[in-house]
Length: 255
Image 1 (tube, rainbow, N blue to C red):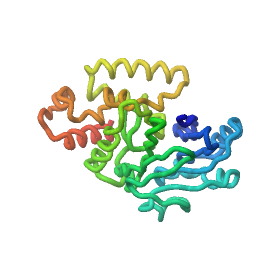
Image 2 (tube, one colour):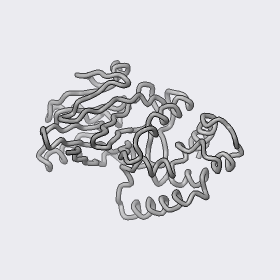
Image 3 (spheres, rainbow, N blue to C red):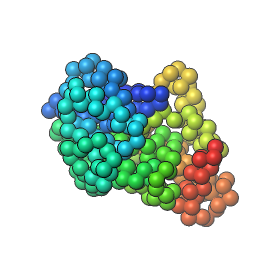
């Protein structure tokens, strides 16, 4: 039985996630932007938190953790290489390590770029990947600590996952990302259709994440640096995909 997934809006535009294994009762939280909304969902569901998975050190992904742990003592899991600036970890993991949540085994993927040692968590049986500020709906995270080629390499690890994987990213940035995407890939019918859907959802106050990886592959310009139409639009026909991605990310930084 796959995890039950709860998507929890936090702060002004963050998302946290709860995954619950009905078989064992284990419940894991992915990132902790603020305590209140997360504690409310745990109470509503009657779940007891067993684990917390941290993706990276930025305050809007960890600030609620102390208050949550006070109510729900849980095992805290994060990147070993980033332990010096994360909240205290009970389990420190490296790229390629596995993590057990209830009856399901996940894997840790180093997706450095937005920050160094940012990690994603992939649970193949439930077809879920938690990408936080690496791969995002119609976008990718701003490159603060790493390099743009490093971010491109990280994204290649994620696009290698099955297309029916649900991408659980960290922010409600999709509407802004959609406007930018149209400047890079304006004639993509799949993108045009998705932008309409995003606009309708946001007008109704509905979330636009999670999303399917197959949808990102068809519409997210940050994953499509190899696409001839995008390369032609940028005047970079035949260029190395890493260089095209770097140009796209630079344009987004200045958008």
